[in-house]
Length: 76
Image 1 (spheres, rainbow, N blue to C red):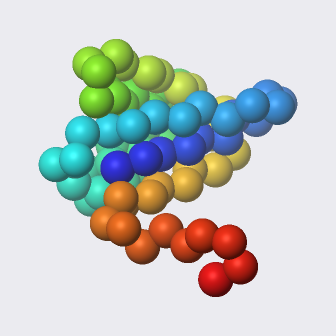
Image 2 (spheres, rainbow, N blue to C red):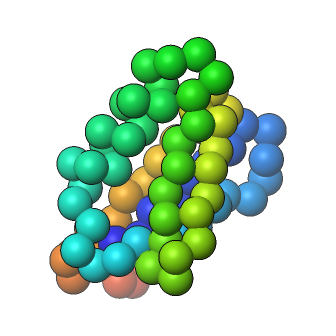
C-alpha cells in the first residue's frame, strides 16, 4: 500500500510504502484518532520499519493507493 501525505505550507509530499498486509481501515482509524485530539500526531510505520509522524493539524491531504493493481497508466 502506498500513501502520499500533503503537508500544509510544504511543496513536497511525503510518500510512504506500507507493508502489503496493512489494513486501510486501520490507517483511517489512526488518522481520525490523531485529528480528534489537540496537538495530535498521525504516525505510520513504513515497510522498512521507519516511523513517520505528522502533526494532524498540518495535513493538507492523504492519498491512499491500496496497491491492488487498479492503477491506471497513460490515458486510461
